[in-house]
Image 1 (cartoon, rainbow, N blue to C red):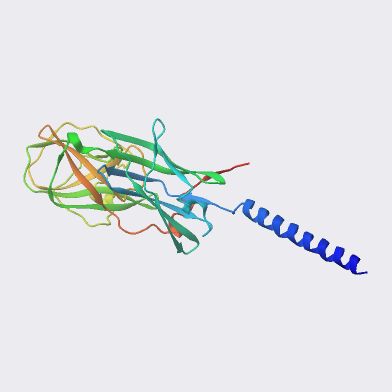
Image 2 (image 1 turned 90 degrees about the horizontal axis):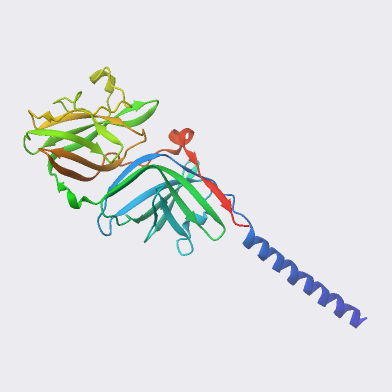
Length: 288
């Protein structure tokens, strides 16, 4: 009888050990139900050592593999160029209906300028590969440009197809220049000299009341224009229409290339509720 009891105890113990082992293995191999979403933005950065850029990702779960910076690799894919991102830091914030993930990283070192209007952020984790569409991105090394100082600079936004878009730049130069030949925010947004005015406007405007024939998609190549004032409102036209919240500006003034360093036009984070209908879903490929 004692022998039978001992066999039963040993059998139950072995069964318990096997069950615990199976549970641990299954738990480690369990796929976290992840879903990621991004808002396409037009981003532009001036390269300098130790400068950072931030990508915003909206997650369906607080338990995200994206945050494992020790084991993950983060790749910026510009189509014909790929950069392995360095010194990545991930912060997570619980917001209504979602979790906001902020991925902060060094700006890749470049020699001149790189850009893409179909940029992607690819994250390789221990269990999957996550591909996120981030929109347009431009990075400028300003070694061939002169830094331009201005007395005033801010943006004006207007609702376009129900979403805020940067439609113009209010700028006050610190002197009156002879002429200006080009004006760009990043590499995909152009200033329109034909419709610019000497007035300045609010941060939020109805651009049609100021310029009745304004078309945000109509990029116009214009000849150099003579400046007769130091203060202007320069309307913007887009090659690729995506939200601009920050960026650099390049200008050609008196036949010389200038740049205005990274400037923040919009400081607040975007509302998940307001933008969820135009967000792009991330692609997740699980490792077998």
